Image (cartoon, rainbow, N blue to C red):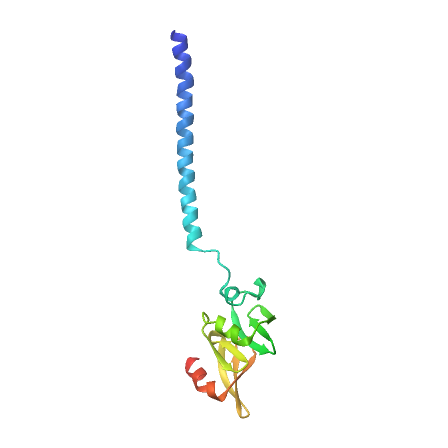
Length: 150
């Protein structure tokens, strides 16, 4: 009987130690998972704002929109990482860019105000120089509004 008791306590004791070890490991793993979820919540994996406004823009052009320009039934989208021509009405594109701090400065041009550097007079017209060196035409009607916003 003593042998049976010794065998049971040796097996039972190691089972208790294993059980305690796995319980501690599981609680540490659960804490790590909770911490990881907090990190994921702090940095949501959403698509760039530009892609949510203009879904036809490729991912490799990023989110740093500089300007858009109407070209017939197409829109030329210019970002800091490049440009692309997409098939979409200009008015629809301008309406979709409400999230951006921009202005339609001409009937066929919209620009992002954070990239506008200076407004220049070009003959009898105006043009806005952008951060990438592009000159965007500015209508006389929109000149004063743009000048106050820059």
